[in-house]
Length: 495
Ligand SMILES: C[S@@+](CC[C@H](N)C(=O)[O-])C[C@H]1O[C@@H](n2cnc3c(N)ncnc32)[C@H](O)[C@@H]1O
Image 1 (cartoon, rainbow, N blue to C red):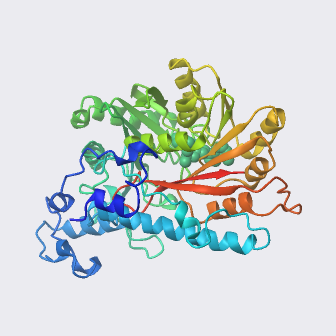
Image 2: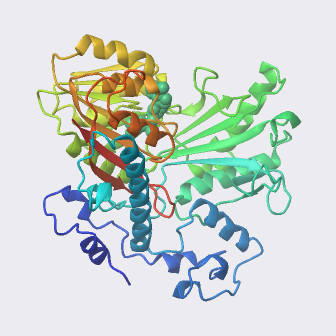
Image 3: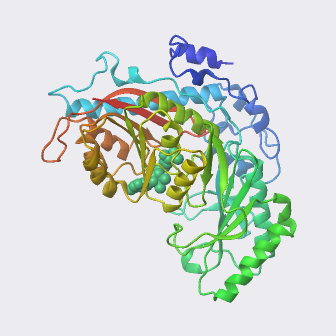
């Protein structure tokens, strides 16, 4: 089989000693034969339809599992489309995908910069020569620390089925399938989901399948940490229930997971959220702790990190360590620089670099995440940091005005899929003290491309992009999502 060493050598990794040294570390379950595990249980030995021609593992179309085996495969193909490939092959696919993203980006930038040519990449190879090999995830199977399960009609028609969707709302063919065999979900998450289903099936209350059709029980979110602690969050549509009626439901689920059949899940905490919208923040509708510890904690890069139910946390903890190390190395922070952590979540990026920087300034929209960042700073004895709650587009321009030119600033941005607000790009671009920008993107195409173009284009007074343009000087993909097509891309810009 194609080996990791061979692949990394081929893409030039082993020829660059000392550069980002942790990426060559062998993942702990590296030698595990995935195909072998995929054939266990309900899986058939592969549906030839989607397999590349001549690929050995796909040559056994015989169906071996029980009735819903094909559902499990359909689900696996939707959620983890690379699951049939070895991890080495997955990394190859991801590398090629990142290369395409950079090629497209380069075309857009070349069109814009034809006159003043701000791109430094050699013309013969283009931006792709800045692309490093994908840093592999140290854990390949069961790596997710958070899973969100829906409630809907299962393949057998039972509306109280807890799982993941196959099909689309548009086509009206949604089926909820228990994700028992998805390679990225740990068994613990499935166990809690299965017991939630047991609870639902004995509850007299209906599930909420479509908002306009009534019903109560909705999603289940499960969060776990490296120590095996488990937080479960039940999302419930309150419809017109009175406080008393709501209390009965909360007591019922609490009882089920403390003393009933669900006790085997050994939950560390159980939350309940009444939510009438697709998603509610803690501000819109508070997460109500029914029992247990209010937070979950993670040990990462020598820090103890607190995570609240409403706070974002990278879903692959070991992979996140790789990501943050990469950001740290690329950022080049030192005791003379301020590190600006924009969209900082629980503050991990900034806090992990605090001892190298003169000051950390974090900006984050979600209040609970900022409270976590402050707690983590205090618990770990970090004092050179400040966290601001609110929209980066509102806070950043003011914050930069107060800092401008007095000290060098390294900016790290890690926005959600929607990318950065234009005012954030503008503020960074126009702040002379920012010479280095590390852009961490979970979706480097789409809005991020627009952000990058605005960071790198020639000065444009109509758009109020006045500062010197940034130049992309490195691109490092980090795989936090084995078996899927997703990858985090860390982009280093300098000027
Ligand atoms: C991809 S997460 C990154 C979090 C953090 N850097 C980490 O690694 O855990 C994006 C974060 O941006 C926050 N966010 C979204 N829109 C924002 C905005 N307009 N201003 C500030 N933060 C925002 C989200 O709440 C989320 O915590």
